[in-house]
Amino acid sequence: MNIKKQKDMKKIIIMATFIFGMLFISCNDAEYSVRDNSVYLAQAAAGSKTSSLAMETSGADINITVRLAKKANSDVTVEILPDTAVLVQYNEQNSSNYLAVPRGEYVLESSRVTIPAGEISATFKVHLNNFETLGKRYAFPVSIGNVQGGIEKSPSLSSFIYLINKPLIVSVPVMKGYENEGVKVHPNQDWGIRTKEWTIEAWVRMEDYRKNNQAIFSNWGDGLTEVYIRFGDANEPYNYLQVKTLGGQVETAKDLANQQWYHWAFVYDGTTLTIYRNGEQDVKFNPPAPQGQGGTVEFQTLVMIGSGATYFPSLCAMSQVRFWKVARTQSQIKNNMYYEVDPASTELIACWPMNEGSGNTFRDITGKGSDAVAGSHIIQRWEHNVRFDK
Image (cartoon, rainbow, N blue to C red; front, side, top):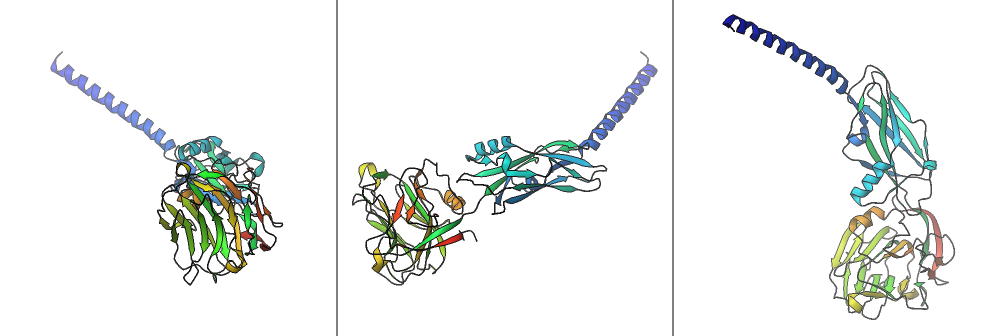
């Protein structure tokens, strides 16, 4: 091949390459013009896959915002679907056990929402009924379904989960001490509970702290594993809480306020006893090791408001007493103190919501038969519609 033909062939190759490149760029531009916009859930774009929603007496309204990356020249219709698969994945990743809100307990105005041409977003509305949760935790998971209008959904921002919380609104007993009475569990027999770890938690409101030794929980065990929880010891003022157990003791600062609700949690992990106040760690200490069988603590009974009229003259309101055979974590305490717990939990020894509203028997809702009974002079009155989160 002569030099002229070589030059002509080179020009042809260059021209073909240029034309092919322009076609390739044009195709990419055409594809890009479709893909440079997307639809997503605004709540997911905020950086979390979940948010908490309180279910009030009227239920709860969920406003789901669908959004475009940029405005479109035509309407974009987006389908929103409840998606239990998203919740299953979330439970697996977080070791949680949320249930999807039952179909009959929510109302959808439509399964679709339209973002009008020239607009950037639209809101999809769901109403949840106020249904009984029975201590179980529920969630409303949603995902973007089909999208009409030539816009694709964002793969990473097309799902979101609303965690439903139903705050406690309950009746509570207001009590005080009387002679040798109290609120007693298994008063005529030994309970016989042995556990290496335990947690007792409750909401408590004291009228005042004018007297020492106002005991809210007592267990004498086998003589070696005492658990005694009271307000005040020998030194005034008595506005502090003290725990005596296993031959040791620990107490909070003297800063408790009259007529104020506190959530108390007492957690023993086999080595350390920690007191949590309103979900925050207050004080802790390491008592001597248990001398019972296998290093366990024995609960023969559990007595509340048990130090008599002389030593318990102040009115005490109490609610949501939970007794666990494990050391509950701070997050477990904090995340559940305003809500019911599942009575079927295998970690519960007993659970007394104390929300009957009348009578003197507090039912153990675990079904294990450990009802607590108040002496005839203990309950002074009942208060209703009490809420701890406000």
